[in-house]
Image (cartoon, rainbow, N blue to C red):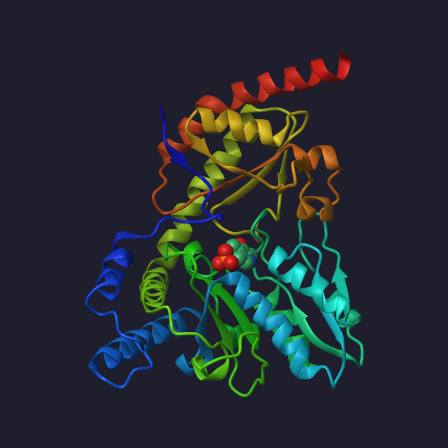
Length: 387
Ligand SMILES: *Cc1c(COP(=O)(O)O)cnc(C)c1O
């Protein structure tokens, strides 16, 4: 049976080079980066080298990078940290209705704390118009948080223009770049970003480690208080092993980004063309051009997404739905609903996300199975409707 992984937006495997870089830090180089002796110094210098590499990936200075436990923590820290620091200046936050749940649920928490949040709607391709952001500003706006690229549909936002508007109005700008880092140019200067979130396991690093960029001079209230690590922004003994892995992954991602972009785009475009040609009643979700290179989200009208995933899994092909499964009930994806898809279409959607180990043969393999699976599931659901 085939064994094809097409779910890289959910997570990626740790690259061998990354694993090799991490391995000594489990065993011989186990020191605490805060200790004064040589064990500590060795860990400290590895952490600082990783910080430089992560800074290099996003065109920041090393002192503007803080390590966290991942994208979720970075998003929480950005939203809650800025909200608490700036609450005296205003309590209004602007975001979009297609953000990752780490941002949306942090906003929900802040609403319960008395902040006011504007959730901007997106167009049918999932794009925000920077003019909408400008129109949503009030005298009380303290923060704009808009993701760089969407994890479900891959749509890329005009973050440079949005950041410019934030800067011109003295408002903080945070962007979640967890999906775009290593795939698109990510440059905190070109984006005018004040804060930016990253995660290790989306770029072939380990799970449970991430980073946040915080522009020099931007004050932030920590969410974890403790022993003053990471310049008092994020306390807790540094996860040296994870940080070294993230640093190596960031270095490799920066070196290989352009080549990867071409490879991923080619495979994605080939799969998209063949799906359109060989299967009726499909709709591509996301922007046709302004989209992550390896992401393809497709609605197969009249077929059920969860069943498609399970049938593909039985054929050895791992993909995701655009929808999350909560407490047994299958909910249509908030992102697809925001594009204006009806709930039934949203539930018939599948996300294919390519990675560095995929090849064109994987596209062939998917297309040897997918048309048959789709037509079988359509027959099943048509029978249910008429029966
Ligand atoms: C995966 C993801 C996150 C969460 O990152 P974790 O490291 O898994 O906590 C946040 N935002 C986006 C866009 C993601 O894809």
